[in-house]
Length: 528
Image 1 (cartoon, one colour):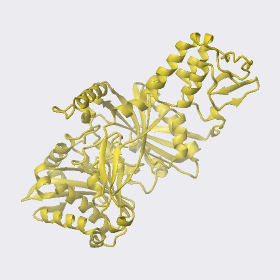
Image 2 (cartoon, helix red, strand yellow; image 1 turned 90 degrees about the vertical axis):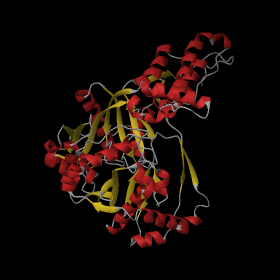
Image 3 (cartoon, helix red, strand yellow; image 1 turned 180 degrees about the vertical axis):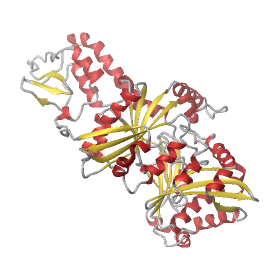
Image 4 (cartoon, rainbow, N blue to C red; image 1 turned 45 degrees about the horizontal axis):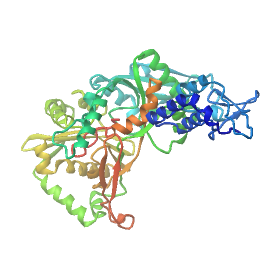
């Protein structure tokens, strides 16, 4: 048992104790490590999971702590092996790994391997064999469309995982440079702030954000929301083995193909993925959430049945919106029409994108016709015309039992006069019901207005690992510091919610807002 050190012995530990406390405040991470270090430096033994070794010491995270501390009745100080060991614990071994806490890692299988491709067609039949059949966003057709017209500055890569000679898993990789000055626009200081301290805080955040730059390797799709980044066959890989293989592949690819990458991101995992979360946390990935994905189940036989399920208040609002858009022409465009209207379409999209709070990628002007070319049955581009003039559009992609909202654009004046954005939401609901889909996936942003048509929030996690070890310890507090506070009220338009919720629930998000502002965008999908 460790005894408390006498005061005369505390001076020689005070400098190290201050170091521990400084790291504790700066990093705000893995409190167990910091408490253990503080306890050792102060002469107290903090509770710490350890496993005994054969040489009479206890081992944790590769550092040996003496298990035979002196325990005289005069409470003399506890001995530590060396201050160098404490320093090593602070700089190299945080957080503790699962293996060091007594859980043996899964044994590697020599038959498991992976191959990297820079072109989706080079991955060929192996990709087709390993990719999930029910996810169009991991199908070669969609990826070929994205590869033919990627956002400016975006590079693509593809991983195929093998068990022996059998293709059994895939992962989509994207490289893009993150520049806080350009992409964190929401932190811009606006003149006339209500309070002086708010202006000062905003300026400080702006200065910090302007210094965040670097190339990021993303496992996932920056244009989408949801789990469309990787897939492994359960027939060949356990969850633990698949996650370990993915991390190993990401590390290898980052070293070989992007030696200057500043961070690795694995995006959009469901919160119930406990096994993946544990392994990613062990590998020093920081988990955080952005705005939730808004999803509307469709247990309705017709659009009229959907409206009938609403309360009178929201049904009246819907009919008022329909009336305002009565003089607009709605039309689905084919490939030839998309190509002819491409300048107008891109201008409408850009007008929305430029007002966004977060702007990681911008669409290439050839992306929409590429989707129509490669996914002629799955892709929908709906144009809205006023007196023959295109004033707005929205897009959707059929993905198995889901209808996924995609990019949009509109004139602000048309949105004000005709409630165009709200009519686009209702049009997606109608399209989903008439197409027999089980749900509409609206994506992130515009949370409150999407909830007014019945969509509910679904939280997704993003995992971030910075290249520099010390910056990893600052990652969590930095994310917290730069997170804009967003408040929104979840609406419940259906009658059955009356018995479940007596008042709207106010969501106070301290989550990173990652796409277009709520009043502008429908689904600039999956931006972190």
